Image (cartoon, rainbow over all chains, first blue to last red; front, top):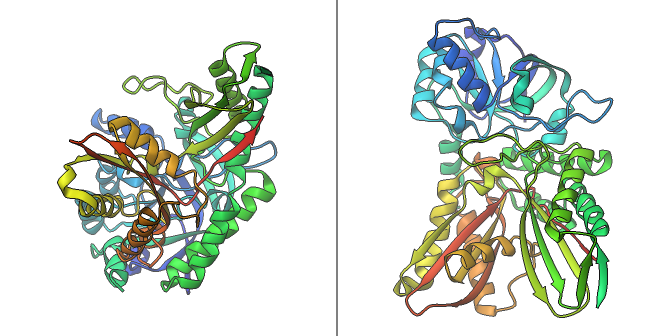
Length: 184
Length: 280
């Protein structure tokens, strides 16, 4: 299948063209974040303070890697269930977040925010964590080290494989894909 | 009496924790390959290929196949002629989990209290199920269970009148509601009968059966086959992105139950259907 190679940060004109089902190879910086880091970021926003990472144009990867073996950049690093970040994601999308990587369905609120502010949601293959780790070339903690695997890490990736699941038109591959193959 | 020292148990559990996370079973690999032949979605095929490649890398490099290295669920089948020396049996198992996860670079995913939620830092405690059996051996099975698929599991106390139709409906509802979250292709463990907690344990035990091995009860084997077809007809597919491979297997375990009850439990496992065992 054809693949589209993209480099972060993403701009509106790139994001606008992405459609559900497209295979994308991501390059550049990704930021990691799970529930705990999202909760802290939204609390900062509520207090009117600065976020510890730039959000505009960026992509957040929902992952809590396993510990790196000696001599390795990172441990196994596949996506976690995105739904747990749904209560927080619209706030970050409104600030210019352009992409999220995870697995599983997003809430109507997140899908609405993606349409309104032009952002996309990518799925990486859940459980293909040893394979995905190979695309991660560097990793450093940039915020909340006390959260361990849930700290915010800055990853530099090369050809990190993802699939577009929600685009700026509000389409959802989880809905459309299942319709195609149900009952056949 | 045969004597087994707790130090042996600890070392065995530590090794099983690592092997279970690094080496996907041959039965699962065979199921992936069969699914590759039958899957009609190109995205689905591509995902199955990634899973095969992932399993190869994990095994060769001794790294976890998934970053969620699970809750350590440990089954002990202890011969009634075995005596344990050197300390508390459950302490020995937990020490094995601690050592296995720390030394194996496995993720520590357990919090000390369901509401206060502080990470215990070493993936302990394990969930331990013990069964006393005839003989002088100790069988240890370690089945690391990921959170994403465990969260999609459920139990319902059906009315006996709902019968097999009720069971079928509940299992399908559960898998459909789970959609992409438990990382399909999944393995579906079903426990029918017993009491509330017995049904849940049966469903968990059903996940330990090798894929491709039907229930010895022909009626139940037929139900397993029917349910597998019905689940794959849902179209959920690999990772829930659409396709014909939603489940690799449906395993059902049954137990006698009360005249008033029909408990049904569904325990979903992700494609990383991990468990390793040793006999001491």
